Structures are given as C-alpha cells and as structure tokens.
Image (tube, rainbow, N blue to C red; front, side):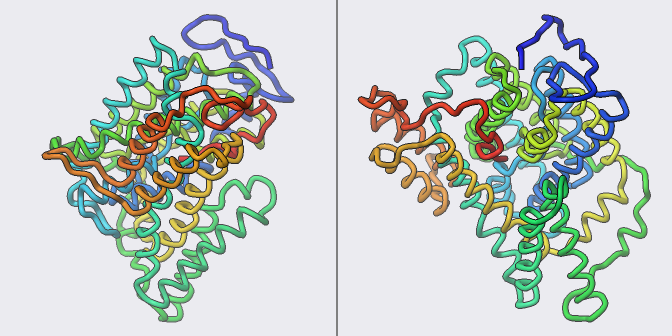
Length: 455
C-alpha cells in the first residue's frame, strides 16, 4: 500500500468502496458508522472488565476511553488507526496502592488516579524525546526478548487476582471455570466476527448461567437487580478527583515503560498490516496515549492504551481508515452518559469476572511467548534465556523493592530488571550470526501482526 501523505494537519480521506481501505481513505458514511460501532463492541469486554477489577466506575472508564481515542487521533494527525481502551498494566499497582478487593467502588480511587497521572507524565516525556531523537534507542532498550518477557509478566502477576475471584466456594469455582470455557469456545468455534468477541460473549454466557443457577434454582447468592431498576437511562458519569501522594506516584511511574512497550508493538503491528511504515508517528503515538492517560485520570478514568482487540478487527476486515475510530469514540462517549448501563455492569457476579480474568490474564501471559516466537528470539543464546527467566520470576513472584519513600511493585521490578539485565549482559554487542543482537530478525510485512500484540 503506498505511503500517501498530503502534509496537512489531518488527511483528506479519499472515498473508496472496496478492497483494502487505508488510513487516509474512507468507506461511505453508512458503512463507516457500522464499522465504528463494531470496534466499540470489540474493545468493550476488556475495557469494562479492567475498571471493575480496580473498583473504577465502568461508565466513567468507557467515557474517557472515547475521549482518549479522540485525543490520540488529533495528536497523531489522523494517521495511526487505533482505539484507546483500559490498560491492564495498571491493575496490579492500583490494587497494591489502594488495598482494594472487589466487588464495589474503590474507596481510595483518588490516590490511584494521582499515580496514573504520574505514569502518564513520564510517558509523555518519553514521547517528546522520541519525537526529537527518534525511536531506535527504545528498540535497543526493549528488544523482543525484553518486551515479550514484560508482557508475559503482566499476565502472570495478575493471575492470583483471577484465582481469588473464582475460589470463594465450589459454586463460584464452577461458574468461573464455565465462564472461562465459554469464552474459549467462542474464540475458537464462533463464526465470523463473533470470534472477535470472546470476552463479551463469554461474559454473557457466564452471566446467564449464574442467573439460572442462583436466581432461579437457588444454588448461590442471587443477582440483585434493585440498583439496575432504579438507575436512570441518561445521566452524567461519576467523576472522581486525583490525590497526589509521593509514594504512590513513584510506584506508578515505572508503568510508563510498560505502556511504551505496548504501544510500540501495536504501532509496529498496524504498520505491518497496512504495508506502510508508521515509525515516524511513534513519538506522537506515545504522546497521544500519555495525554489521554492523564486526562482520563483527572476525572476518574483508567489509564488507557492502544487495543489489541481493535487491531485484530482491522486485520480481519482490512479496513484501516482512521475515521472509523472517530465514530467509535463518539459512541463510547455516549455510552458513558447512561447510568443504566453502569448499573447493569455492576450486577456482574464476581465468579463470572474471575472466569473472564482467567482467560484474559492467561492470554496476556501467552502473548509474551508469541512475541518471542514471531520475532524468532534465540533462546540458545544464554543472554536471552537468563533475561527471560529472571524477568518472569521477579514478576510472577511480585518482588517489591523499597528505597526510602520510593517503592516499585513486581511488574515495575521485572520491567526495569529486564532492561538493565539485558544491557549488563551485553545485549547490544554484535553477534557473529546474521540475527540481530537480541536474537531476533525482522518480520516480513505479511506476518500475522495480531500475534505480536497485547494490552
């Protein structure tokens, strides 16, 4: 696909009705609306699940995911097709810093919001540096062996949260495992685009099963629909103000490195799908995501990142027009103004959430391995093997480091440990074989991009 750019602030989207639709092209408006709504459903399951796990308001999270997507769209000048949804990178540090245990609202949400803003500020600084100095130094600091390990650590570190949610009773365990099985079956056997919605459809199946067994057959605690019946259809999201504490901000700051790794992989994947390099927009992509994180946290939203589900939809449909994400963001903002929607989300039983978490956290961990495979990381090289081994152990064991008022959780420890250890072991020195210093070779553009992405 040719690299077209008219040099304006925003592209002049050219109408195209068939074939591959590039970022600076568009479908007829009716089809653009339909595809945009489809992207909302694609990101919906995980974007709603993340705030529930942290005790954030789902309405507010959806609202700010739409706002964040618009911010990202403007910062990258409409050149990078992406949706910003709730990032799993923040779940662990939010739970640690607030002491929150689901379900219900997080009483200490303010300190978490202050931490997200701190991570966003660090992320923004990195974005500005990349805009002026280029991105090669980022790739050298975080080659595939490092990014794969860090992505895997996110899933492994969160695994105890999922197990706790399904371990309260035999009934809870059965519902959780049934929900996980339903999500897995949808991902493997569902027809067409339904296969792109395993979390949403798996959650619906788990919810229906729980209601059947608990509400109708009395085998567990019944779902309470009182709040749902009383909630109005239209109303403002529940906004919250950030609280800035130095110890919490230092705990959150390292998450910026994880967001860089996520976004770098996503932009590279989209570039491979479209057949054009988007590397020159990497700095702006980092900055746009960073600003979106900070804006969301000023009002009670979760930290956001580019979303694998939406990139997967683009891979299937071969429609990359950035205008569809403007539509998706507007729809998400509108959903944020429905308290009825938020009340419905609040009725989801904890075991159902636990079952979905088992699938999501496991997929995140497995995606780290897929990054290694797709980039052909050479584990016969002792450097790569040791970096991966130490990183996984630090993150899965949740090693927390404290130096005075400064503390860093397991994911942060693993992230910085991977970066530092790789450099100490001479990761950047030349090798005698044709592969790169990190034991990886570049993927051809036709390689499956979805396999190398995660949130």
